[in-house]
Image (cartoon, rainbow, N blue to C red; front, side, top):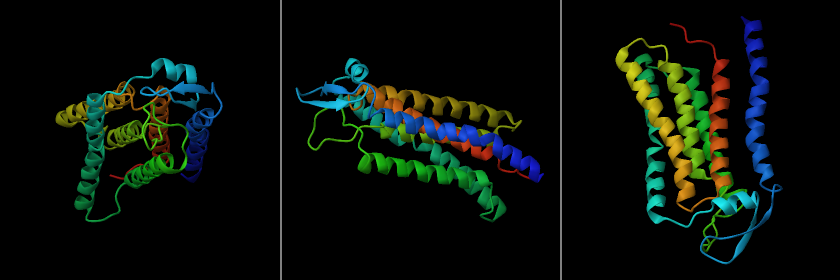
Length: 231
């Protein structure tokens, strides 16, 4: 059993490193790839930004209505946390103990890391500013709306599938498929809306998607080495 566990751990080390390196390398590329001056959408002022030609070609004028929709969707994007919380609370109540599945604790750790990334990019590590000139200028990379929604939805999707994926109850299977569709819709809609709203460059939402999916991938790999729940 111990040998089997070690083999499983070794099998996930390389994929884990890849999942961590991809968002890091993309972030580093924001300092070097195709750096150029690009004008703000509402001003003749410019800022030096990576992937300048791509971002200039896809830049949108500010749209308040779409921005509002994306803000509402951001609130909706926290619903997967509620679903996971309900599932975890149900297990605590059923067992009358905090000794529940290890996956819930790994999930909580990933959400804390996600919140930490939000703080870092919003306050400490400024890669570029939003396409719309404002005072003060607002950090733009990655799109934190996108990163949080994709990270929460994708990671929750992995956990919920692991918990209820083997259920043979028809109503549970139907509910699972509906949640799958809902979570995927969130992950697709948010990056599109953030670009169309004029609040972000295309590379901002790409960064948000990369970080969010990387979080889910790391979580998925970590839970593969967790011992199966005893029945």
